[in-house]
Length: 333
Ligand SMILES: Nc1ncnc2c1ncn2[C@@H]1O[C@H](COP(=O)(O)OP(=O)(O)OP(=O)(O)O)[C@@H](O)[C@H]1O
Ligand SMILES: [Mg+2]
Image (tube, rainbow, N blue to C red; front, side, top):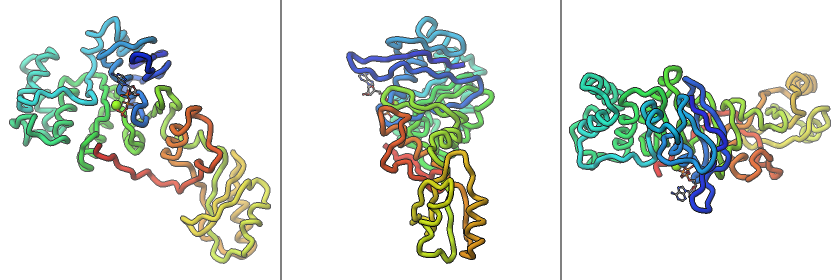
């Protein structure tokens, strides 16, 4: 439904994105994840026909963004980074104006308006001037204009920017509910957002795509070793060395988090059973034994700290963490 093929964008002699290639299948929700300045907005502007690529092609719903922008625009809802809201209009006036531009007739406009006012919780402010709305409410109006005519493709540039936690959850639910019936690409620099709403993540860094996969695959793909956390009730003083001597164990760290040990083991080898036998057989008391995987946050940092992208760091940045859902919430910048 969305096909980006070898797209490069240069501003003067500054290359914002370079040979970016990815696609989004019909009904898929894709996160375009990257740090500030990575090239997310540039890519989305090209998809929304706001500016042409310097090289390469972008197609939406089978139409070329450069050759057939009207056909593309008819099928997309676009939330720009800074939605062009008319400050002197009320919410209803503005959305009515947008609906007319989109070619909606009176009936479509009435039902579309009712739907977005309800889904974006804008009913209470619909008669207020946009200029007087808070940042979060203005963002919701921006989303409302993108969703107004229920287009099959949605291009959302940081849709939850500036929203409060309750609204973030609601907007994420709203985006999730679009999956299947709509094709969505959303940009974000917030990992939990990508994992919470998207089936697939494309990570962009310094204008280049450094990874593309499901959130789960991304975190497992970049492992160099299996990691197992072991907590023992009465460990002998030399337990770390004893673990290290076991076949398949590459390295042993004392874990401050669990008070136990973190074992790095051969990739593709599950030593849990042997470790359990070893600890229990020696009568040390096994309190906990589990595999640990890198969080998506670890992967993201690993990928975006280095130009090479896929090269793991040698200084321990890949250190395993407990497998917990990332809890970081967006800052309101
Ligand atoms: N109109 C422009 N003229 C010159 N350089 C630009 C222009 N727009 C963007 N850039 C540069 O292109 C690069 C990518 O910017 P872009 O806005 O696409 O990044 P982004 O991933 O959306 O970042 P953010 O998370 O901060 O929104 C940056 O280095 C930026 O400075
Ligand atoms: Mg941006």
